Amino acid sequence: MTGALIAQAIFWLTILSYFACLWKIFEKAGQPKWAGFVPIYQILPWLKLMRKPWWWLLLLIIPGVNILLLSVMHVELTRAFGQRKSTDYALAIFLPFVMMARLAFVKEISYVGLPNYKEEKKSMGREWGEAIVFAIIAATIIRTFFMEAFTIPTPSMEKSLLVGDYLFVSKISYGARLPMTPIAVPLTHHTIPVFNTKSYVEWQKLPYMRLPGLGKVNRFDATVFNFPEGDTVVVNAQDQSYYQLLRTPGFTREKLQNDQYRFPNRQPAGGITVRPIDKKENYIKRTIGLPGETIEVINRKVHINNEPIQDPEGLQYTYNIYTRSVLSSEVLKEKYNLDITNRDKQMAREYGFFRMALRPDQVEVFQTMASVDSIKLEMNRPQSTYHIFPNTPGYSWTEDNFGPLWIPKAGETVDLTVENLPLYRRVIDVYEYNDLEVKGDAIYINGALAKSYTFQQNYYFMMGDNRHNSADSRFWGFVPYDHIVGKAVFIWFSKEDGGPIRWSRLFSFVD
Image (tube, rainbow, N blue to C red; front, side, top):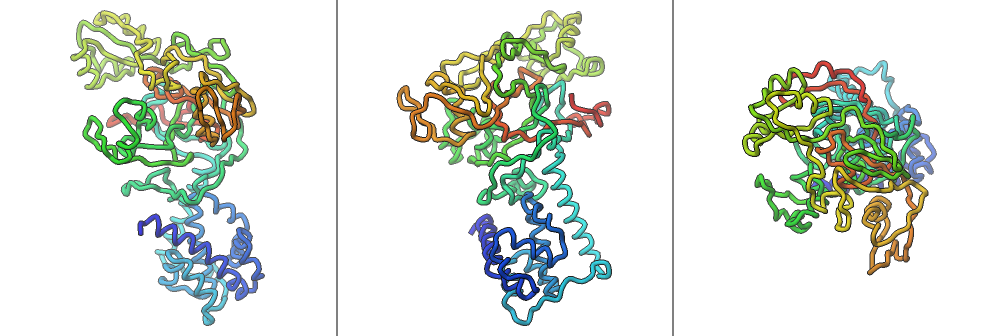
């Protein structure tokens, strides 16, 4: 039996023990025994026996907190019945259904109540244990409902947000999303460090719900969201879209699933894993297109509803820089905060030019350098059909010339045809959980012929400020509202990879 099956067996045996044992436990403790048979309500008399407030019940929906809190409740119930040895506590924590049965049906065990905490002498180990549990619970509540720390792993938002920036992301800006996978290791996302295994279980799920927020998602917000295509992940290539890999010649699901493919670095695929919404990888991009708008990119310029919009301050594109002599990396770093890596220098030796992402003001700097022959913008870079959304033949869009594309809005209806279906197929089929099928020129949704579709939630179009080095909505499409995590608001630390601390960025707000 695997560890996951053992954990699942303990979970369900514990749940069953509540109905089998709590009525007798309550009877012994002078509580109404009928309460032991009422799901959820049975927690309230239990809390009363522990002298704890009713709102502890709400903490049981928070991943990680619920595991710790139930362990505390099992231990405290055990103590209330006079079982106060270390072995009793261990049994209550690791085999709670066994302890429940003992408390309920062993005649010699009776309810004695909890001691006065102020007068009770605690060992140093217990004091440290309680302090650690309290700290973890408090940190998890803050992380779930108010603020969470993130780091920037890729350059897709440079120069606005840099690799190595550590951010606080506000959950209350848009409303905290309640956990959908409630049983999880506290203070982890989808993987337990060191052990490199899943930090959550999927056999216990909750529906999507969101608390009221301070505002809504606005244009130009630096928004954190769960990667929409991250429901399926190649274990040893988690930084790549599984669906983009499948669209690449030579890749098949069978090869990746059965670990029959090796990447160019000789790393095996490692199989694939499936993740729920709230455990998908976290991405950060700038919100550009809002629900109900039509977005179009014309010669790199973004248009919304046929009108050009203002560019973000940190916007940059990739340029090829042809030089007469080697550029000084020290001078460029000191004067212009530009990095030329050893890889950049190697590529320059091989291809005869430097390839760099630059803002307009930085382009002007290079144009004035005597050592620069010319500088050319990379535009309409060749991309295969499977790279650019909607990832299908018939659409010749590029990073620099994209759309027009209407962004779905909750409650609004779009006419469906075989031609425009690729734009909305994943929305209808995956994000809104319909059974979609195409037979010839006919489209069927949940078995019924469909000539239109009404969307159930809002969607957004996200783009990185580093426009030629950003895997964003131009490549994989819309971001559903139920994938939105929060708004990046504050940089609390920043450090170059293997380099110094960026003191000027510490404690600064995100633009």
